Amino acid sequence: MAERTAEGERFARVDWYAEELGASVFVGCEFVDADLTEVTTRGARFEDCEFRGGQLNASSHEGTSFTGCRFTRTSFFAATLLGCKLVGSTFSGAKLRPMTVEGGNWSYVNLRGADLSGLDLTGVRLVEADLAEADLRGTVLRDADLTRAVLRNVTLDGADLVGADLSDVALRGLEWKGAKVDTTLALLIAEAQGAVVTD
Image (cartoon, rainbow, N blue to C red; front, side, top):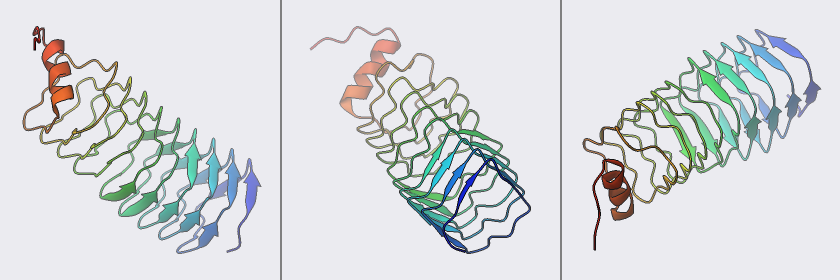
């Protein structure tokens, strides 16, 4: 399939298995129960698109943007996202693991209640991301930017947050059992629990 540009189109039950979409552009489009298994994109742009159901299993995306998109019950099983932009996108009932992620900007995403356990999100930008009630057990968030992110009632057992920026994040009341943190974050956690830290 050649690169395409589409705006406001509805793609229902399309079968694009293993198609190379390159730098295609989709604006305001709907993908309903679409089979995008093993699809590859490079520098593609999905803007304000809606994905309902469907499969992105084993798909590969490099430098692609999914901005302001809505993913409902969409499967990303074994998908690869390299340097992708997901700013402002919402995930509801989506299957996001296992998945390979290298960097990228996920600021303002809504991942409320998502199962992100065991994912490696090293260096991902998650500014003001809504991760409330998400499962982050064993998740690697090394050097991730979580500035002003919402972490209410998240599960952090065994998570790796070394080097992560949690500026302006409400840390009080979170469970840190087995989580890996650096000195800077350890001090912030202690202060959030009411400790007075002195030199």
